[in-house]
Structure formats: C-alpha cells, structure tokens
Image (cartoon, rainbow, N blue to C red; front, top):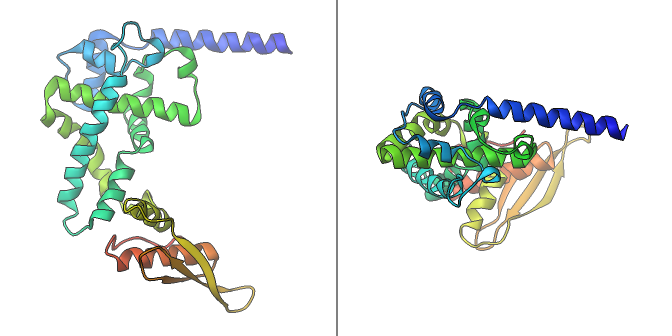
Length: 257
C-alpha cells in the first residue's frame, strides 16, 4: 500500500509539472492577462514577476513579494477613496470595516478566482497543490502583485481603473455580506484600543419551545445596550446591531438569524 501511495503521489506531481509547462509566458501571458484585466503590459518581464511565487525565484527580486507589498497599498488607497465617495454619510468606523473586508486576503483570493489568475501563477508543484488558507494566500498575493505591476507599468490611473472595475460592484453589496454586527463591533472597538465587548443574558421569556432571550452588551466607556432574539446568538447580534446604530457606525447592519 505504501508503494502504491508513493506511485500515486509521483504521478500527481508529474501531472502538475506538465500543467505548469502549459502556463503561458511572455507575449502569450501578456495577451492572456490583457483579456482578463483590461491592461496591455508594455513591460512583460514585470508582469511575469508579478505572477512568480517565491518558491521558484532565482535572483533576489525576481518573485512577487515586493510587488505584493506595493499592490496592497495601492489597492487600499483606491478602495478607501472609492468608499469615501460612494458612502458620503458613512461614519469612519463603517468605512474602516468595509475597507478591511474589501481588501482582505479572502476578497483578493475571490478576485483571483473570478479572473482565473491561479492557473497563470508560476510556482513549484508543492505550492500549486496547496489547499485551504495557504492556497488562498498565494492567489491573494498574486492579485496584489498584479495591481502593483499595473501601477508601475501604466500609472495610478490604469491601476485605479482595474480596481474600480472589479471592486466597485463588491462595495455596493450590503456590509452584512462580509461582516456580521458582532464582528463589526469588535473591529470598531479594537480601532479605539477598547476591550472586547461582553454579552450576558438578562432575561428569558416565552414558552420553552419558543423562547425570547434578552442580552445586555457591555463595552468599556459606553452605555450598555440590549438586544432580543429567539436564540442567544440572535439576541447578541441584535444588541451589537443596536449598539452600532446608536453610535453611528452603520445604519444597515442586519441581525443574524
């Protein structure tokens, strides 16, 4: 059985190597990216670097790690400006929560999936075969590096055009799609160096088969806030939502069912 397992593993590794060889390079890669992101690269070497993972780097600076650093900042700037404009009545706390969600690793990995970037990344077989969080990080890093490459190749306007085309529709979604009220509250308090909120059941009403819970939310430096729901979790979400609305953090945080 051990021999069979090794043979299967070797076969999978060989197939991954073959697939890697089919990855477009040079002008073909530039044409493929242009069709997906809407930017025709003049510096093809820069594009190849943006899609090269550190697992296959040669000389220092030939992988996408430095580009990832720059792209993260360009993305944050453009998305922050976008949010500032399309949510003129949003408080700082709400803008911060939306920004955090839109530029997160999960969001960038989703963009990579939407554009089919994963198949264009140059990485060793181990990275190509990674699963879970590691795989998401690789895809997210490639998107951030690609943003930096567009910025360096065509300027801020080109990078901004790409980001807005992909991210603006995501920003229009309700904040509940990316953060629930309890998470929003926890992040908002963390920005103010406040302790984590605490929740306690203060009342339970109704019959056993249909109870109504009342939860009190306490946060240092703020008045307590109450929330009701058919479960403790729903009551906690209601309390967090009420707290956020009272403090002007968001006007559309929904209660979780």
